[in-house]
Length: 114
Image 1 (cartoon, rainbow, N blue to C red):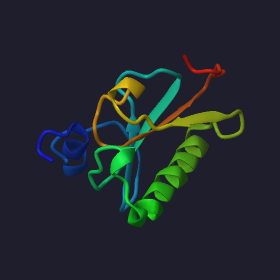
Image 2 (cartoon, rainbow, N blue to C red):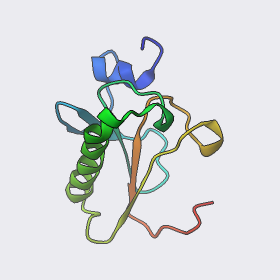
Image 3 (spheres, one colour):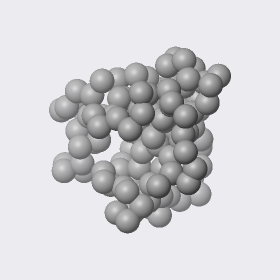
């Protein structure tokens, strides 16, 4: 997708602050962090939203969560706790329409999130 900011990061057209990269996943620091640690984990294949996932994408979604686990360990937030969030749709807070998993930590999280 030529207009997707995350696809531009994957292609190298833009350079994010990369935390982790695998064959299938890219993880980088959020430019508008909502916690001391705020990393986005994205698939390298464009999928617009959770609503566009197919059964064949189950392994890829699992890779996002395994990457989140690794990011939490690398960032030193795995023991104290962290939150993972994936928004679906504008009213839920999705602002970039390429699925992404937020990894948030480094402070106490409230529930409900607000």
